[in-house]
Length: 271
Image (cartoon, rainbow, N blue to C red):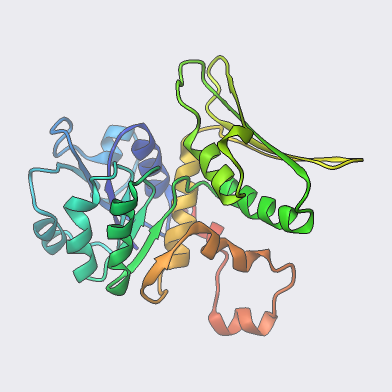
């Protein structure tokens, strides 16, 4: 699958690394706000041996229409900011290009605009696209349904200089219908990011915990998303939509054969 990447900050670079190492994706280009690194090769810049083009372009060099006409892709992955869709979304939608946004937060009006493209193409948004966080969210919802009156607390830990409450922790609180007062914040050292949901029963405690080791985890989530979205009908999707089918503990072997499904993780690493 040919992909383009919007945004090339710390997370974007980590995601680009995973995309280049995957045998399912072929990184065609990167678009960033700055002209720094313009026309550099992403594989060369990251020190990864690859024959994929992966050229870096600035936002002002081409319009999105020009970019997609000359360097077409099957999917656009957005790790920029909420204004990023102003650049590419219209051009992508009218060409049927899959849109995967991993922007952490949108104003309601901007999110509504992103969703409006679902009539013309496949659109997905996930404020935290790591597989672990999204698995944790679904598991927490299931447990809350089983025991709705359990005490629930959210603990988030990050590096000492992070001033604000974690956006992911706020998402967890919102998805579990909890007040943000349920979030307990810890700031220490160089912790990349830890999120824990504590369920306090009268005679037992359940802890669901996710720890980020490196930003490449976002790349793993992207690979899962684009592989699952490939071939899906037009519409708006979340990571929960893509993950829920995997929560079946038993699956009809005939159904798997008829769909010719392949394990998505086999697309991670190039031979």
